[in-house]
Image (tube, rainbow, N blue to C red; front, side, top):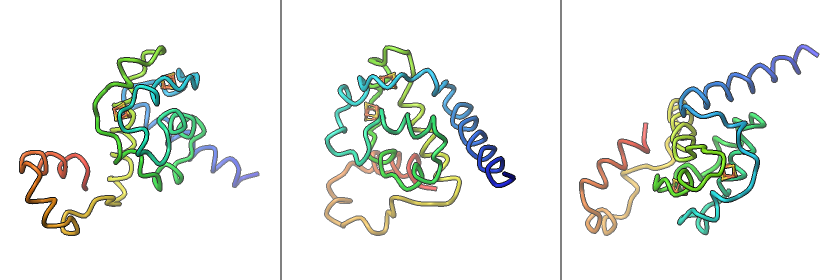
Length: 135
Ligand code: SF4
Ligand code: SF4
């Protein structure tokens, strides 16, 4: 019983933190899937935005940490402008990234990027990308 309560507390704190960092109420999501339909990156995503929202509502912190979806999100805000519940999902994705980065987990290791990719990409895009997506 004590373990169950402790797990509940951890889940509750995780959900509260995501809401605080994003400034959104994740429980407003009613799982319509419009966000995924509007997302230009959904074909590349390991987990669709709708499913990420459900996992957040369930407090699945570990599963969220393992997911690559936050790093596949291009922060384009298409989901945010199309959500019928007015949820700024791009900000939720940002909160998901922050939670992972605060654990010093890096999904992108700049030194492992192929030299050809680094040559081709605009430096300003690389620097701003690394600022946003690495700890
Ligand atoms: S569009 Fe909004 S309400 Fe619909 S699944 Fe996505 S976040 Fe939830
Ligand atoms: S902000 Fe991210 S999740 Fe939302 S539509 Fe753009 S790429 Fe997809």
